[in-house]
Amino acid sequence: MSETGTTHSGNMLRALSLVLGLLALAGWGAFAYAAMTSGASQRQFQEQMAELKSSQGQLMAERDQATAEATDLKSGRDQLVAERDEAKAQLSAARDEIAVLHKQLDEAQTKASQTGSVGAPTPSDQPARSPGKPKQKRR
Image (cartoon, rainbow, N blue to C red; front, side):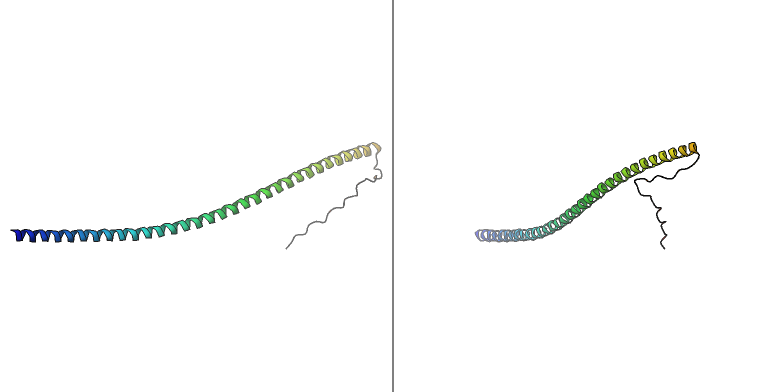
């Protein structure tokens, strides 16, 4: 029985060694696979980071351009408002001048109807206006 016991125990040790060796080999294989997968994941992560940084730079450039365009639009709007205010002031002055001229015309007509004739015109401080040339149509 001693021979069969040692043979049986030797076979058990060999089987145990074989199983432990296979488990160690499987463990190292799993470790190598995990390391490769981790490296691939790390590379993919770095590529995504590079793409995000590139996109961020592009978006920042677009934002800066939009800000500059908004500033230009505000400047143009301010200029248009100033020109509109100037045009309103000129229109008001022209209306005042028209009112004065209407008043002078009414006074002259009243004076002419009272005397029955029109007198010679008196020279004014302002030069006489000549009518402008009519605009020609372009072809």
